[in-house]
Amino acid sequence: MSSPLPRDPIAQAREQWVSHGWDAEADSMAAITAVMRTASIFLQRADSILRPHGLTFARFEVLALLGFSKRGSLPMTHASRLLQVHATSLTNSVDRLEATGLVRRIQHPTDGRTRLLELTAEGADILAAARDDLNEQLFADSGLPAADARELFQILSRFRRASGDFL
Amino acid sequence: MSSPLPRDPIAQAREQWVSHGWDAEADSMAAITAVMRTASIFLQRADSILRPHGLTFARFEVLALLGFSKRGSLPMTHASRLLQVHATSLTNSVDRLEATGLVRRIQHPTDGRTRLLELTAEGADILAAARDDLNEQLFADSGLPAADARELFQILSRFRRASGDFL
DNA sequence: TCCAAACCATAGGATGTCCAAGTATATTGT
DNA sequence: ACAATATACTTGGACATCCTATGGTTTGGA
Image (cartoon, rainbow over all chains, first blue to last red; front, side, top):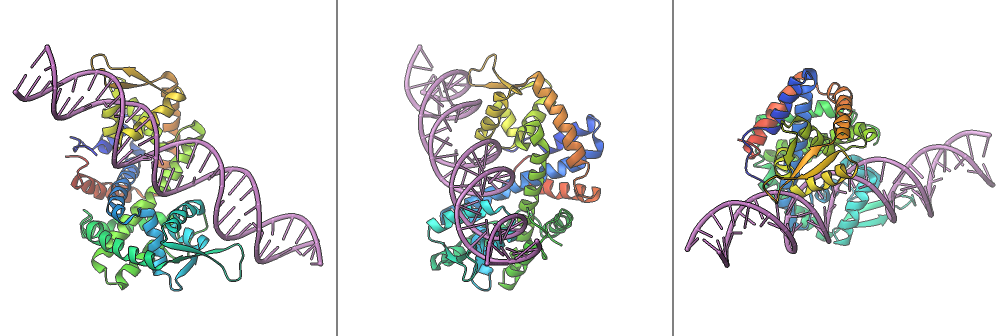
C-alpha cells in the first residue's frame, strides 16, 4: 500500500492517549487498534491469494465449512452461526457461490423454511486448490512465529469466550 | 448476534486442520481466524458506541488523527498513510465527515494537488464527546485483562513491523 | 383447532475496503 | 523550455458487513 512508516502509528496514538491523561485506557486502545490493523493485513493477503481461484476469504470460509460437514450439507442458519456472521452476510456469500456453481441451495426434507447448502463437485475442487494455496502461501508463512501464534490464539480465545462467542 | 455456541468454532476448525494432516499450518490458521473474528467484535462494539454521535470507527479515527495534529491540518495522503487505509477509503470517510460539517477540505498553499483536512469547531466537539464514550465504554472495559492487552499489542507489533507497516 | 409468536431466509439500504482508471498538478531529465 | 514521469485525489465498480423489514413456515398455547 505504501512504504513503511518511520514510526508505528498505533504506538504514536498510544503516546497521545497517555499524554492526554487517558493512561488507563491506552493499552486497551492500542491493542484493539492493532487487532483491527492486523486483521486487515491478513484479509488483504488472503483475498489476494484466493483471487486467482475466483474466491474471497468470506466465500472460502463457507466452502471450507461445507467441506468439513459430515453430511455434506448444512442449513443456512447453522452455517451462519458457525461462521459467526449475520444471516444476511451469508446469504450474500452464498448468492455469489451459487452463481458461480460452487454451492447449491436445496430444500430441507421436512422444514419448509430451511435451505440446505451443499458443495458441488466443482466447489469441492476449487476448495481443495484454494486451501492448498492458503496453507502454503499464508498459513505456513504467516509472519507469526509459532510461539506467538499460539499465545495470540490463547489470548483471543479467552477474550472471545468472555465476550460470548462460545461457552 | 446469537447465543453462545457450545464449542469454539475456530478450535473446531483447528482440529479439522490437524486431522487432515495440516498440523504445521493449524496454529497459524487458528490465530489468523481468531484475529479476524476479534476485530469484527471490536468493530461492532465501537460502531455501536459511536452511532449516537453520528460516527463510525473509521470516521472517528480520522477525527482523532486531526485532533492530534500539531498544525490542525493534514494532507489526505499523510492521513491515509497514518491511518493505513487506501486513499480511496479516506476519500469516502472525508466525504461523509465533510457532508456533516465535521471536517473541511482546504487548499494547500503551494501544492495545487494537495488537499488539507481540518477539523471544524463542531468536529472538535463531537470528537471530544465520542472519544470520552469510547474510552469509557470500550477501552476502559474492553474484556481484555491488562496483561493480555499488553502482550497482544507486543505480539501484533512484531508482526506488523515484520509485515512492513513501519520500520 | 386456530391464531399468535417464533423462526428461516431474503430484500433493501448504509458503510467500509480495495482495485483500476482518470484528471489535475508537480517534478525531473534532456 | 518541454516532454516524460511521478504524485494527489476522485470516480466507478466489486465485495463484505451490519441493520431493519418482509414474506413464508412451523410451533405452541388457548
